[in-house]
Length: 145
Image (cartoon, rainbow, N blue to C red; front, top):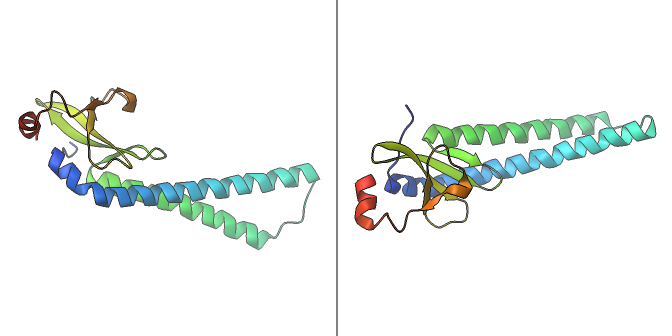
């Protein structure tokens, strides 16, 4: 069974998780840029019917791409070891397993938001998230934590 968080626990972890998420996003973006560069090189070679390529430079770029991809995967794994789930790496969305009246739910946070302010059921998407305000008055939030 996965860890469940209280709202307070999840909120306390945000600075650490935001830093990890940013590292994963940066690595993934770098990997994608290097992949595009490799594809463009392959395309130029194909169009020219052969092209002199500095093999050492190409090998270094490929190694950089692989390293960036692995760093992103490792950082996502680190986030998930803490118990949060990366819902959308590029948008910077994390979910935290949570309980609502004994039912599994997810607290939802998006990078740039100052606090966790939303939640949704596990079978729902980010677009279906609900605000913690409204039916979750301070007393009810404490009851769910």
